[in-house]
Image (cartoon, rainbow, N blue to C red; front, side):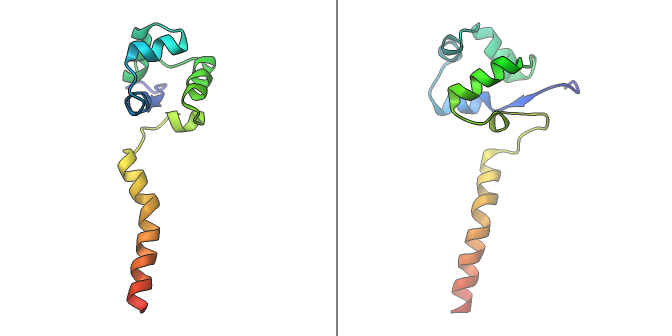
Length: 95
């Protein structure tokens, strides 16, 4: 991929909300093909479009777009849960 690619979580966010590309595009007043280009990283959103997408999903821009590839969500969730799991394990070991 080119150096200036902006990675995104649009397909995941769209799927979580049960939206087709057409429905998502209509909500943002853009062409549905633009959604495909964005999702594949073939097109970078303008700042204005990035803000509209952020507002649509009610998420901060950095949760949707990044200059680096995103880690899988399952890995991120595991890393968030793992410290509390270890704490619970240590608590039981101490008893």
